[in-house]
Length: 113
Length: 112
Image: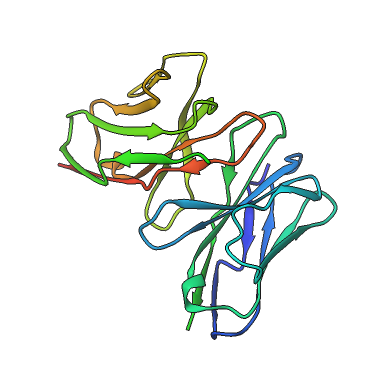
């Protein structure tokens, strides 16, 4: 089957605009994760979904960041009033609920001018 | 919360030699330790993982060792090849907590 997909692959926006990033997990994976990777850095956890609920939102850096998941499948990460420091690659991963192994999507490269 | 430290940040080895990357973690409750390989512009790919009930795991040229007492784990790549050049990330997770806490990455370069 298909792997984790993300769209768009690249997004350039102006400071202050809102952006939406989409993640489509592997079919059957009820666990979904968002991470952020700044240039040359490691991956920083943002939020974790189990089904449609988010038991761990501890990594969201500010209230400008939010995420939702509907139908236990597709997830959207929204960043409001984008700032230049939001520029990064946003990676989504999914897994079976009983398994730690996470499969990553190709990421969305966000550039805030 | 959990903190993972990874060393070295860059590593250059001759083709055919071995490479070792080390990570330490802070939370003794962590029990799952994956290693991901990320080639330039690509997604992270799991290459090997180990759980806390074993001390070593091997898959062809790649091995991982875990020392729970010292809270550190290492990736060993033998007979390195040019295609091993990439950034490698270690991570740690607590069963049930799900999220992975990553190290800062090691850029491995294999010199022909």
